[in-house]
Length: 315
Image (cartoon, rainbow, N blue to C red; front, top):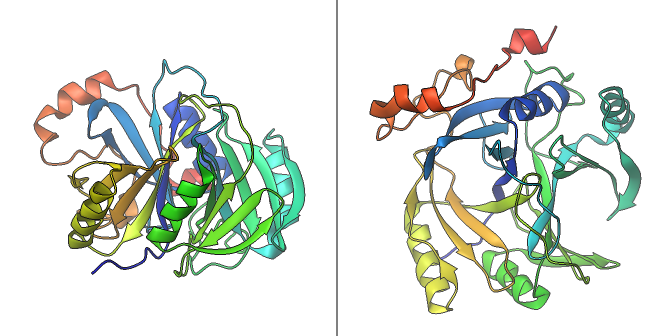
């Protein structure tokens, strides 16, 4: 029997430069690089995972770096923005920190009784920091003092080509309509982290996928059996749905709903720490068993990547 998703699993974007991406998300935002691997569909493309200490579901941002990628353009149908949670008392800390690192900040503003400020990463990915409560524990060994550290994902914002259909999909997944401010309609799932999706009910030009765009958002499901049930439901409705895929760290499927947004449904287990030394997460290139025999060839095709250790981040 299908059950509602408790919230977002991860968010995946497209960028151009892997080293620039690592430097920004680890040294500026203070997230942990918990896994560097490759796109399992394109083995000569890196796939970088950032999150809390263990990369637990609801904390993870992932990126595909394509060095020759053209700039993306934000528009429908796309995920326009990824938002992260910070403690309410950390507003001034983060405004000062981002400004000190040369990041242009828009805000703060008030939204749904929370403080929000907006900025972009070096590739132009639209990001927000949002004050709020979270069950996520901060990463103690990162460069940000624990009392100010990011507490996982807050939300994503969607620009749909058909807001009514996308709203129906959110309802099907278990997100409940909880309010509206202007043209922003808020939905929330019943979990304890990464529970918010905002749907913008506004006219927008069409977007273009590329560097700085968000490729998809994944929501959490309990196990692989649930994925097969979701697959059958989406197929019965005529949606563009993939088969269930083995991503080694989780199983998942993709569905492009009629509003044009690409959702992934991903299991919470086995997780990003499977077969990993917790102290060495993200320090070397991980390859799944079916690609291990090609390691020398794959590493020879990838641009070198300098990954700072926790001690280097804290200098």
